[in-house]
Image (cartoon, rainbow, N blue to C red; front, side, top):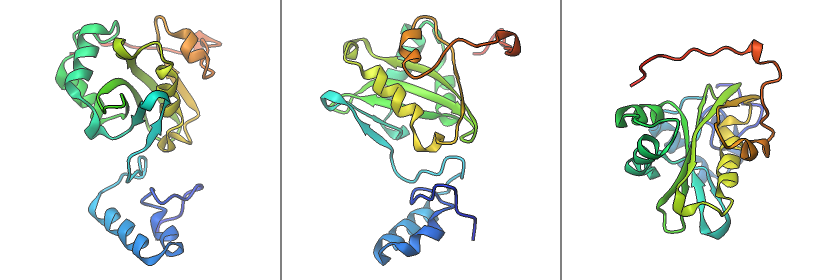
Length: 194
């Protein structure tokens, strides 16, 4: 049996064998069947959707199947200042390798997005955060960022970074601040990233 994590969870494939006996037999059997049916990487051990309800019927979700790729690609490639011209293939690839949090209107349509590029253990980079124009002015960006930072899969992440041109006030609400000593941080950028 694999060791149980510091914070045992029914959603963690490593914890499930140790926690399941504590449950009623039918729930244990149900969870075990899910574990057998789904290959789950321990760094991202979720078996069920993580959803946060926000004001006005809006909600966030980490279910990638909910993401409207057309809306996401259109905003990033045509409206954002940081990803203008990004190809659909790159957007799809970025989703595969990140924790993606969608923001949804009460009718289920996509209203915003945030992405964490992470090792699911110690560090993460918050990026591609946006709320569509029609849904702005309701404080939804705060709920979206909070849902990303507080996601259970990122509970052990202690080092977060991000880059922003104009949303410093939003991120400061969560404790983000300019680098204390920028001389200790380096960056490299590929001339053509596709």
